[in-house]
Image (cartoon, rainbow, N blue to C red; front, side, top):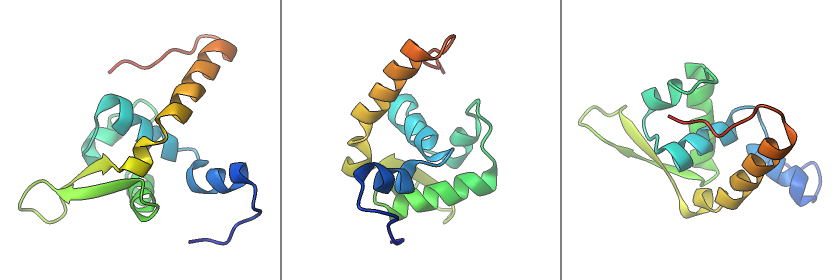
Amino acid sequence: MQERRSPCPIACTLDLVGDRWTLLVIRDMMFFGKQRFEEFLESPEGISTNILANRLKSLEEMGLIEKQPYSSHPRRMNYQLTERGQSLRPVLKTIIAWGQKHIPETRVPSE
């Protein structure tokens, strides 16, 4: 685990999930049921394959997701939120509500 900038819980949380892509990957798993690498690539934000691979690895290392093979091919994985990852649901719902209230023309994506 990386060294903390400060003991502030906001700073520590942002160090884990505060980059541009991590919460979007979690969103896709939590609200859209995405589990496979290819499914995450279909999201409208257009994450690149190398960044997605990095974020999935980081999320697994943080204990927010786990992966399971879904075929005999060793590199084919399903990703699922752990209990720790699922515990971010109220945070994401609050971000959704705030964005809808304060950022014009935002809406919950439908897929």
